[in-house]
Structure formats: structure tokens, C-alpha cells
Image 1 (tube, rainbow, N blue to C red):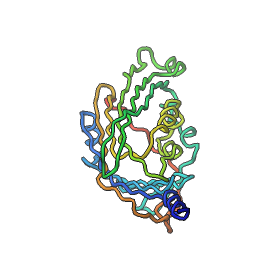
Image 2 (spheres, rainbow, N blue to C red):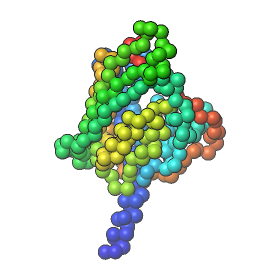
Image 3 (cartoon, one colour):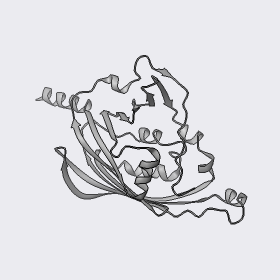
Image 4 (cartoon, rainbow, N blue to C red):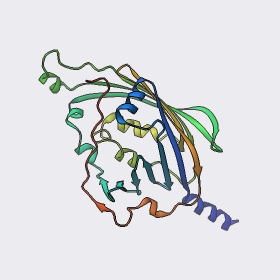
Length: 258
């Protein structure tokens, strides 16, 4: 009995998970994002989990969280970048530095359940309202009558999550994966903290967003789920890859601006 319990605990501690997910976009803004960015209609994302380590393959790029560091791999050039833990604060764009951003974030379980990929999932709903403005100093320096009035951005995200013993979502990984300057913002820290109440790994999400009067709905569905053992090499820098300096990704332009 004791041996069986020990083996059970050992298996849980080394739980592995692979998810293949497809994402679709709809709404005026969603169509524009696909058209301007040349994105496929149903891009495929493959997620690997091993304990608190993750690997994401999407669009030819690979992102790895090895438990301590976030790595961005370029398989075509056989290079990788290490995202600094303080990259968000140091690399905040001038535009973000001038903006006054306030947000109201809520994450709550609904009590609803459904079976997805043979797993019992529970639903969480995250709502967010973001108000954008200019900081006092930036507003004073702007030409008279040229201070932009930006409508609030609202979003609602429905998550269906399943629990897998031994697998956790890392807040550190979430923060480091965000664009430069974003993770250090108070509302993002609040969102990350509240997301800790979500139990399990999302198998399906639907986000509906209203940005400057344009709507977009992004739906992610898991099409394949496997709990077969995964090699440790998936969560490490491949042999032969060369490290290059970290370059922060640029922030996307707001829709409807020019």
C-alpha cells in the first residue's frame, strides 16, 4: 500500500501534458487583424507542460519556460534569446510611459462544468475594463486640442479548465511572456494575481473584446490531448543553438489609428 502511494505521488510530481489547440477570430477587428497580419484563419498552437515548465510552438517560433527563465527560439536561424526578468520595466516603450492606464479586473468561477477531450472542466469568467488616458505631464506638453480621447477597452474571457496533478501555470512565465512594459503595469500585476485563483489548465477559451468600437472574438479549442511522457530536452535550449541579445517585441498599434 505504501509503495503504491509513493508511486502515485511520484507519477503526479512528474505529470506531462501535450495540447494541440486551434484558434479562430471573428468580428470586424478580428478580420482586420488576420488581414493586416497575414494570420491564418485557424492558427495551430502546440503546448507542452512538464511540472511548472512549458513549451509553446506557434507560427514557426518556440517559447520555453524552463522553470526559471523564459527562452525564445528561432528554429530557422538556430538562435535563442533569454528574456530578462526585468525586461518589462526596463524596456517600457515611450508611448506606454506617457499613458495613464487604469483597469478593473474580475476573475470568478461560475460553477458550470462540461466534458472536453474526456476531461471534466470548470468554467471561469474574467472581465476587464481598461481606461486609457495621458499622464498630466504628457497632456500638458501635447498641442492644445490634440490630447487623444480613447474609449475604454472592455473584454470578457470564458475559460474552461481541467486539473492535471503535478502541472501548474507559472505566474513568472505569464509575466515574462508579455510585451515589453506591459507586465510591470499595476493592472497586469492585479490580473496575474487574480488568475492564481484559476485551478487547472485551459482547454477552451473564448475572449470577446471591444476596442474603440470594433469587436473581436478569439476562440481557442483543444483538438488533441495527450498525457504521454515528454522528454526533458523539449524544455531546454537545443544543442547547436547560438544565444543572441534580447530584443523586446514592439507593441501593436491601436486599431483605427491611421
